[in-house]
Image (cartoon, rainbow, N blue to C red):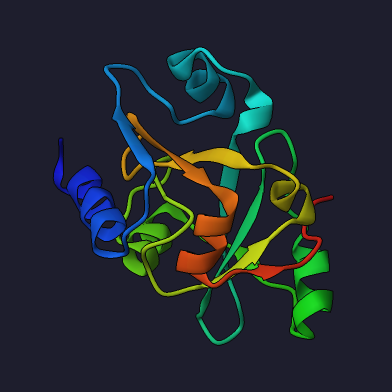
Length: 154
């Protein structure tokens, strides 16, 4: 387990979250790769789309694995200027995790959870690295990231 994965595991333990943390010998960077790693369906996964607003604050749009996040919907929902997608360096700087491994919790951000995600009981999200995942109950996820439920998918 690398330091990013350890950080996720420690956060889950510290917040008394009964989630499963998996580390694989293969990439889980894409939803397709992640589904193959757990022998599951792509419908069971979420993506964490990192955006930066005009104040250099991080917004994380959490959408189902096959959906896309809309910066226009995020802007309208939050009544802000349209945010831009974060680049790789900004993702590490703001989340403390590398692109492709960012979890849906565990760092300071405005978390926006698409309603399609809340229709699920359990989801898989980034586990801290490209080779790790977390399986977590959606209600636990909302509790630990204090996410706001807003339609952010296209």
